[in-house]
Length: 422
Image (tube, rainbow, N blue to C red):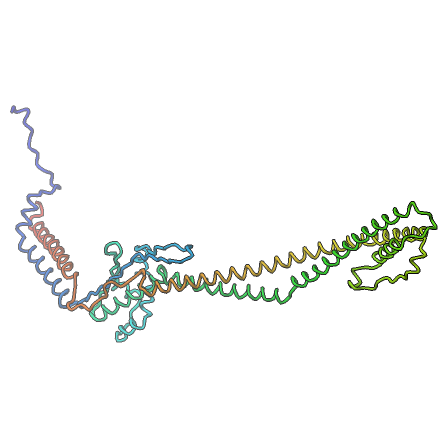
């Protein structure tokens, strides 16, 4: 290498740190640094172990599971339901202010802290209680307290309150509450429908209209029968007149024709709608029939034809009136019967709904009694025999680290004081 290619060696500036010098200085003060580490670590360990109040930890485990409810109804209109809440939502509920306040208000929990100078507050409970998710469906409820029995009892009461709240919000018990409310509502609806039907039946408007409708139908049938008989009488009368057309006016009509004329006259004057079947019969003497001439018979037949025509004319407006009355009564009867049928259908539907809800509630209660709950206490808390303080090790490590930093600072300070130019 030539002289002009060789670079001149440059000394480091005064404000740069020489790592070799720094390490050498710390190594020279290793005894001081080690002593500081040991002193602070032992102090922290002693304080955590023997001076500070020992803590006892107790844990209860709550299992949140999926419950399959199989109604098994013969109707076939119910399907199985899978009840599974969100485990993370249940975990959040475990440490919520509302649920922890329920724990504070519990008589058992209040009795645990009755001898303390200050009662347990919500913030105090939050400082000793914690919840975490262990696996997929297991919630760990952790309590740390100075008394082992109190820690386990508090953890168990917390778990029980948590279990009951979870089952009430998410579980089968909630379905039972909803069904009970629906059952009460269905029972009220059934009673109202039954009362409305009884009032409608007591009014008997449909029966009254049916009776009136039957009477009008009978009157109309009688009028129609009366008109038909009058028309038949007129036809028979015309046949008699045809038989007498070729006879002399003064000729005597046969007795049989005279009797037929009297019978037709009786049929024209007798009203079957007013007189009973065995009404008054027209009595005619045989002598009167023997002297009846053709002229008199034709005159009587003409008078009867006019009378029959007048009677048929009188029946026409009566028939129209009865038809209108029949139509009005039929519509009113159909409307009343439809209302009655509607009330009866409502009663039957309400009764069927009430019965179905009773069956479903009985089914859900049976499922709930069998232990098909969403939340269960899988592992209850027990009183710990030895205090568990994971903070002892942590405190010792932190104190050792702090001692090392403090020792290094003292060593470097002393070195700088002895040689400030370096």
